[in-house]
Length: 132
Image (cartoon, rainbow, N blue to C red; front, side, top):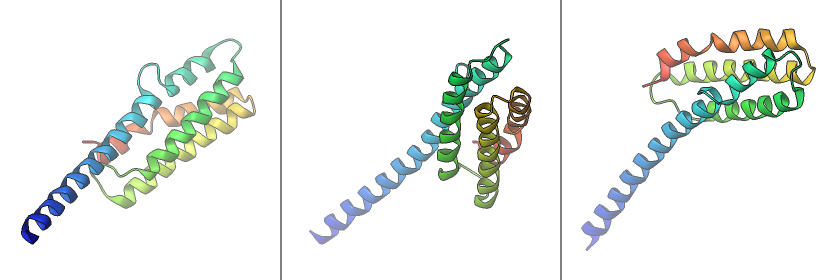
């Protein structure tokens, strides 16, 4: 009886850990999809900044949400790679999204464009180190 109970607990713990790790990876994929895929926040912000007269209210909402996603990303665990590297790279991503948000809040098109440029070049290094 005790053996069966222990085996059941061990099985449940193993399944729970597997589900947790899958959820972490899914969360990162969901964050990246919401942020960067076609129709995501980053492409919407890029498109909005190219408009002759940007809709600063919409851009502010999108940049606020992008910063929220970047914050969640930093709290996630990457599927591979060094933890210290993840902390540094996710903090850099958060800093860049925050700079974009600040520029948009100030309706500073040049500053927003500069932040967009930095964000656009930040993907490869992190993906090489941490993406499966």
